[in-house]
Amino acid sequence: MKQIFVKPEKCIGCKSCEIACAVQHSKDKTLFSAVLQSPTPMKRLFVEAVETMKMPIICRHCEDAPCLDACISGCLYRDEKGFVRRKEERCIGCWTCIMVCPFGVITRDKEKHIAVKCDRCHELEIPACVNACPTYALVMTDVEELPKEKRRMVILTELKAAG
Amino acid sequence: MQYLIIGGSIAGISAARAIRNADLNAEITVVSGEKVKAYYRPIIPLLINRHKSEVDILYPDDPIEKYSANVIYEMVTGVDVQSKEVLLSSGRKIGFDRLLIATGGVPIIPDIPGIKGQGVFTLRTMEDAIRIRDAISDVKEAVVIGGGFVGIKAAMALKSLLDVTIIEKLQQILYQRLDSKGAEIIQNALKNEGIKILTNETIVEIIREAARIKALRLVSGNIINSDMVIVAIGVRPDIDIFKDSGIKISKGIQVNELLQTNISDIYAAGDVVEFKELLTGRPSVSGLWVNAMEMGRIAGMNMAGANIRYPGFLAVMNATEIADIPIVAVGIIEPKAGEYKTVTEDSTGSYKKFVFKDDLLVGALFIGDIKNAGIYTNLIKNQIPIRRMKERIIKGTISYVDFLKKI
Image (tube, rainbow over the protein chains, first blue to last red):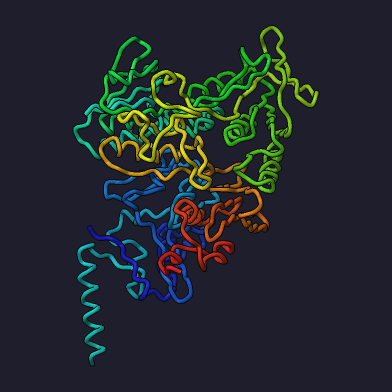
């Protein structure tokens, strides 16, 4: 199965992924209506930086998801594709999921008093964030494909260095 | 292999899941003293003001069915560790190869004259919450004994329906969950919601008139009117039935790092267990749902043949929202001076506190702004050295990137 991979070395911190995420989770799913929507739609991933390293922090839909285990109201569940999603109407805003997510990718909807998290754009083949990334810092790849690609990159750099 | 689990709440459920994941052929039986399907215990206060119904708080997929377990709705009266049998209230006996004790906790009832009789409630089970809900129609003034999270949630559920007073023995509510400053913020918010709070106060007598509660005499000498008392001063491990079984007990059931009792085929998990607190190393009873879930998982895996060590639990690991104020408290919040250093960040709508010991973060409190709280929980729970992250921890700019940079 294809997964989202993050390549920090390619991220320029433009936050296109953040905007695309918020737009995808807005009412009409267009940028124009999204900016006018009140309250403005919320993003589910966060471009963070430490010194020179930038990268979007996204939900991993962990196999052993702490948020899913800790949910005290039966709101979070794993869907048939393996994504950790919400049954919005069950969320009571207890914030236990926020307390236990080591990635810090669950936030509060302050209007509705419910937790907000990535749903992996479950209805799209390619998630909005990946689709929006101009530098391919976010890509969809098969887990098996990744090491192959890494080896190719190492060889290319070595060849370049050798002239 | 016959697995028997005493207790159908979160520790028992997560053990059943772990056993099923490890052993497809396992025969799992859960004995539950509560005659209802599995439900989310932490949200029972929402039943009181009908914010949720009984059906709303049940698990969406019944875990007993999901993990193909058998369920027996009966009370356990004892365990015979020699013949490996559990005795039920009906007189029936059930054998086991491996047993998990996950009986949880029972509410502590203070010894006050007049406490026995109608009008006094606890809030531990779905049935308790329903009993309160059904009783409030002829109640005007309720008093909650205990300013912990359960007491506050009960008070919040009741306040739209009647007058509510919280009586707290100590000088602040939410002792050890919040520091004094944090408690003050929440106390003020609760007052704005119309809840009265009396600190440094206890009830010395419940005055009744023709069996009905009429008033409460307080240690200060004051008398307050009340016709309902909710006792929420904490729970103690539910161990009475194991007392003469040969299973080692002190405050709770004693277990080793595998969550195994002194009898090798008997394990224990959740609020019934006494085990070391992660940060202080002190033998403690947890009382927290998230810890019970984790203990149940590890005990279940070990019962099914794994060898996973439980490092201990955090005595404080709470998230909630009270009167529209989100709160997360993890670890040591109000340390004794000396080896700990504390930093507070106080701004409009947000109060934060961080407690450090040497190169470790050992406590974090967020009131108002709980963004990224999980990153802090991870640092505390896994005792990750903070090195150059300290300033970013305090400023709140820390992110998962910090861990990748390995600084």
